Image 1 (cartoon, rainbow, N blue to C red):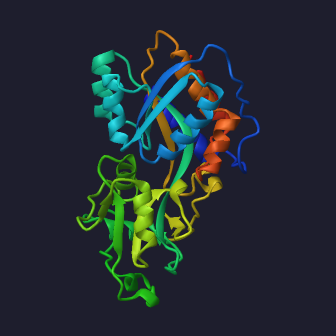
Image 2: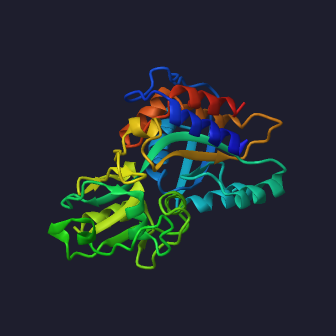
Image 3: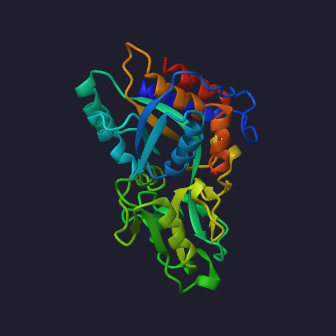
Length: 315
């Protein structure tokens, strides 16, 4: 089920005609009676702000609901779901097969992934850095020690023609290994290569962006929702031409090379529907109001079709 849902959304993102803003076909959320209790969310830092905003809006409708959120990295979500310390496992990547296997060995069924938003994993530079864009080969040549994309190592901005910074070091910022963003960037941008030891690993996305914003020679990667006025998100190219901005349209049509779906994983038995509190929270997340929050936080809303598909999987 995990792979089928991931492939479903991947195919949809590659062929959907991108709409501007929130899809008008998303359902409007209407509160229901009898919703109370406690929800725990443990997982992705990328989704931390979104989970907090969703929780705040949800708790206003349901005063008898308490939601606690911890965002230390996607790799913390699977153990929390397995141990039962959380009902919600936000992840900025799909679960690895070994994580699914551990879950399945305990419960005899797989965890259920719910797509909640679309992200352009952005490559940020300082706002005063004039570089127009980068190919994935150049990104790999900066961040990776193995350079599986075949480029020559890049350590100075002058190596890619940035004359105003020709003697400036390429100062690298990234996430730590607990992060799904770290895993996704390594898998896609670095073609499963190894990171350089000189990458300054940060515990959170905001720290990556802050570091890049303070150093004109810096470059780092983070979810688009963490963009600030001190940085620029670069257009990227798969092959060194036809650069694509990290926009909603380019993520939806599959042309931006680092687009991804953000997930919340849950423990749902295939024999019965998910509990009412978890269901209503996710129904809110996948509603028009929930996806408006996605847009306000700087990420890109899901179209109505995949949102409905995910919601259907909760019943």
